[in-house]
Image (tube, rainbow, N blue to C red; front, side, top):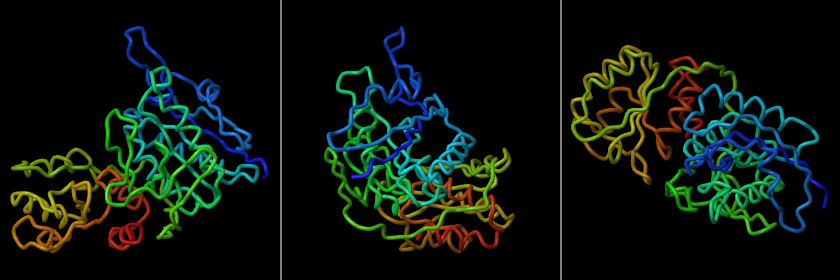
Length: 331
């Protein structure tokens, strides 16, 4: 087998932590070079590793500008003839968002794998080095490129669109509720369950700073003033994390109609871990009511990821073409 050249790009997070004087963990304190010193690959995996320490941050501090910078460096790496795959390490708090952004924007010409850890490298039973090892092995598997950016965690492979952090501390930190994993890693072996079902072309023509899109959860008796407050403070669009099948409190309908009439895009997803939105009910604040008011109804995606897709498309799409553009990447 030909030796593969894999680039490992590090951004900080728990996976790059070291102990602090207080006994806690300093997230992102380790450079990529220091982190990779402790990784041992399975026998038979023949790779040359190149390390790029791009950021050293906890992932709660990652910004859209950071993600855009990660895209730029990632694209440069994937377009190099001498590179066979890219691994990105990242804190778990916002890993699913960065992975989805890169899935929408990076070329699908070579494997791009993201991973992190639930336990810091210095903690008992750390998963840091195992997850990095599995990510590197996955990045050598050329067929994985058809999935775009993917998430490797706990010996499982997840599509970036459906990967979600489901546990705050245990090693099974990520899953894809309702969709399941796309494969697994067993030592030097990568197993994919099938081909990618959709071929979404990368979103192009966007630029930073991206338009601000706010995320607003619906909940029992939530104030309708929250909607106007988002726009008054600078939001260019709103994604609602809706109730059940895609519902909001009845009192939200008046401000929603006002915002849509004023040209502010409003989208809604289901706040449930599984299941699509649906126009199966007819009452004030139902999905049918929202759809008739011009709200974008989105299926099978979390609000955090829908926000990123909407921001990218707002950056380069005319408002009257926004619905069609969202439908294309949501299909």
